[in-house]
Amino acid sequence: MISVTRSAIFQIGDSVNLKPRSLVYAVQRGVPVYFPYEGDFAQQELFKEPIPKLVVKEDVKTTFINENPNIYVDSIRILGMGGSSVLQVGSNCEIDTESKVINIRQFIKEDLESHAYMIPTSKKV
Amino acid sequence: MKMNYTVVNKEIHVGDINIIGLTGSSVLLVGDTEHISSASAFDTPPEALIIGPLAPLAPETPF
Image (tube, rainbow over the protein chains, first blue to last red):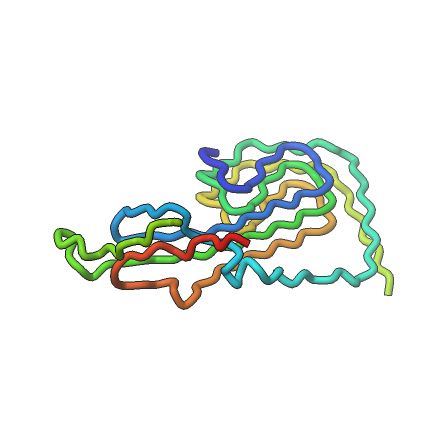
């Protein structure tokens, strides 16, 4: 495992409840330009509406019999974990993960030298 | 309609797992669980692709 980013969970052992959440609002620009005070989660529709949850209505009674409670793992190789992903070696009762991503891409058609690719930003009052 | 579901754990032995990336809201579980609900949303709003002068995203509105 090289990198565990955002709200990823790398757990060895048991747990009861895991609820990682990850909200990403990313902008990729043709030229690395950084504006202050930009981006607002509240204005994006995706972040406002909740993702509908499935209601478990099946009447299932699960019983676990652990004759051998040990878990043997030789090797797990993962380059990276991101978003709200979960890697668990062990048991748990409930995992509820949610990840929302918005990617904005801004390209420029003016050539770089003319520096006409910038809109004069209004001063933040 | 009731359902009884019995899990008998004898021996779990994982040899080798190779994964390049575990992203979004995915789960890799070696063990038992009762309930997993994983949701992931990816949105491309109309302004997702803009070709032209670079403009800052809408700033936070103070409320």
